[in-house]
Image (cartoon, rainbow, N blue to C red; front, side, top):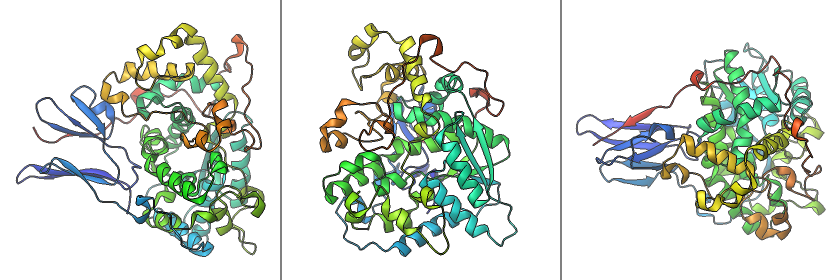
Length: 470
């Protein structure tokens, strides 16, 4: 029921099984050597130099050396994308999430929660605090990261004060974020703009959390995929398309958010747990008639209404109303909007218009469409030059964490293709507008605040690689 990637070797005949958890919270890759060997690694860099071809090990699958093929072991009813019709029962959904959170507290190591102040992490924190009430366990430690004055820092502090957690705020500057780009790409192993932007603050924060002696953190990933929490779901035309899109999002998590949460934390030896991706919880949540998940202003239903309603307890509130019904922020937006502008301005100073004109010839696969994307691609190709590596990153534009469905549902989305959630114009209450930044002020060049220093690759935990068979 947990998250895992493993290889099981039969020493009698040297056959083996390899398997990966249901959704792909942990990372795993499989490669083949020119001599017939099979390689399994938790990181792509473990295969980069020795395999003729390698690829992502598919989540929810096992591989047998005897058959030389994959077999799906995780195949829940929702995986077929058939539209469910179960009634929405708030108390059943609440109990399922509480169980998913509490089972992840069975640990004997120091732990805490990544608290952004948004709905998902705040609910998880509230459940933990209720569970710890009356026990001798120390107070829950909560952690938040952001630029000075960022929305997440303010919201997380308010939630922490309400719940009574021991709260830590980690600050970083835009320059810290820029300095971390190459380290982040090295560890996260992607050139996807959305994933890199969101990984930067988490990567910086994880180092500081580990330095405090914490070994495990709980996070809120997965909720937006399950409940259609991204803002482009406002445009879903019917419940059938809404549900199918949530299924697609969950199936793709291992290439985006799971990649970020797993590798950003493990880079510093920190383990991350994600209760929203608990198999039993997903079975409950994905079996709800998607009509209840649909955003409907006439009925007062905002994104993730079914989750909010399940924890809207008037007698014993889990959270204040304005937190319970706070609109979704993407991590890179919530930590401070100027981070996006700084990253884009930094890339613009390095990537010329001529380079962009020739991008389709230099990078015919997944051609970068922005200077920021081009900059990340250059770094990625230098670190991972094999064709197999570039093929592990999905193709296509991302708009507010969307797929191409966003433009299909509403053509207006095609007019602004920045991955920020604030490009959801007419949906987000504070639509993102890029700032005009002078050349001398493209980044905040003040010295880093003492709470976060520039990370170093050589301090990080390296990958685990297993060579299994020749």
